[in-house]
Length: 110
Length: 124
Image 1: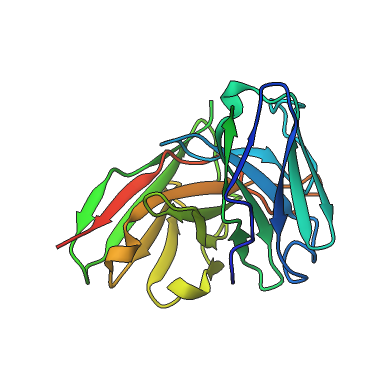
Image 2: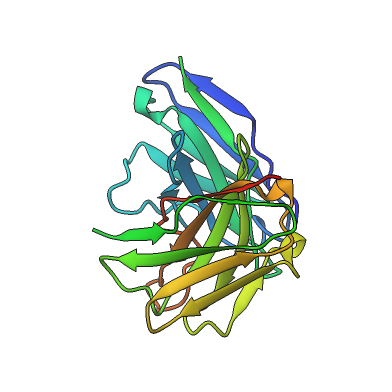
């Protein structure tokens, strides 16, 4: 199972919106609405941001939103803040009954 | 406060085996799937496998099949991941994470709570 494809880095100024893409195949991202997103700060465990493509768990800022079209899912961060500087990973359930992560995106707040 | 508490760092020689543990504090995960995810230094997250509530069902990443074994001790509520025939490329932080139930009682297909990570270093 190949990793889902994400851009290596995305940057934006405070207050701006950025979008991170996550491209898979018809056997994973395109097959189910089981795409989730995780934020990871250096030397910390990942933190769940989005489940089931677009559901935001309680406690997660409304500035984070998710969507999906075909084999590509997206995470949008609006009103970018300094604390959003971190690595972001998508994940999808697959038709093989396994899970696959994205390659990861480093977000830099300029 | 929910915590998944993992075993400490370990150093192993190539060819050896390592066993990492994960136990919940503050809640019970006896009815949940537990997953293991690893992260090599400076690299991304990699799903390695999962174990079901009773321990009877397991699923592993294809590239680790034959070397990885996940078990759980239902009496103590502890989940284990054992990796054998260790290679230098197995050097990583290993995380356990739980998969919650969805609103219909099914398995939700994402990971909500994560352990603090256990660094496994493979070196001669």
